[in-house]
Length: 250
Ligand SMILES: [Zn+2]
Ligand SMILES: [Zn+2]
Image (cartoon, rainbow, N blue to C red; front, side, top):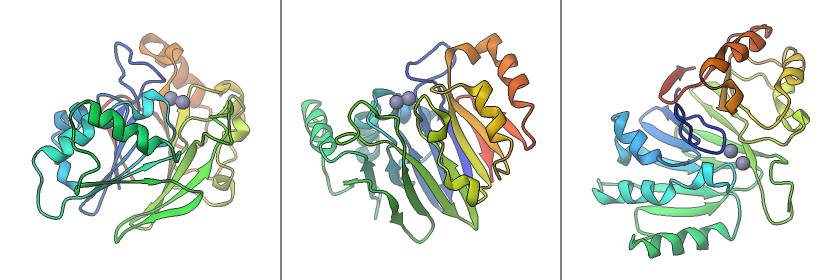
């Protein structure tokens, strides 16, 4: 699997990082985790072909993770190729209607034959000939958990397992606990909402083969990155700090 961290910021664009989106490539397919703006521009800059996109998995409905969807839909549907189809998984039932209205207000045709929208549910919810995806509920949307959901995702392909935490709550016990039982080849972990200094002590014992921090908080940007590097150097396995456009293979 090849993973490109297209946008690695923490809630707002900053001078060096755009909003959250991560591209996963396996076999001949492309998949996105989150679609923060300007996701379609970053895909164009990375010379990716839109017709290869098979699915988009939105972790939660905050703007920095979902705000680029109309632009992505426009780019995806503009020059259709044969058999092209992208399924968008949203974490809330009501979100599909909102997306449709927002697209319509921008004179974009949606839903179209080229795109579909589904609601994510816990457990294994997506499977094709290349990739299996499971969702684990997190407590990031604590303000109204009955109506609003947020998810971590587990991706399985090519005999490898990749965990993407999505945004977590302010308590690190929100980190998907299944990682403790089932080793993962790579974990892409957000680094904004909890106390990372304390979490590093917990993370030491997790069976993770490689850890990539993304969704980077302001204090770690630019010159602050050295402090983050020092902090995560305590971990017993390889760790990286993601930047926009970085590529990781697993
Ligand atoms: Zn976020
Ligand atoms: Zn969020």
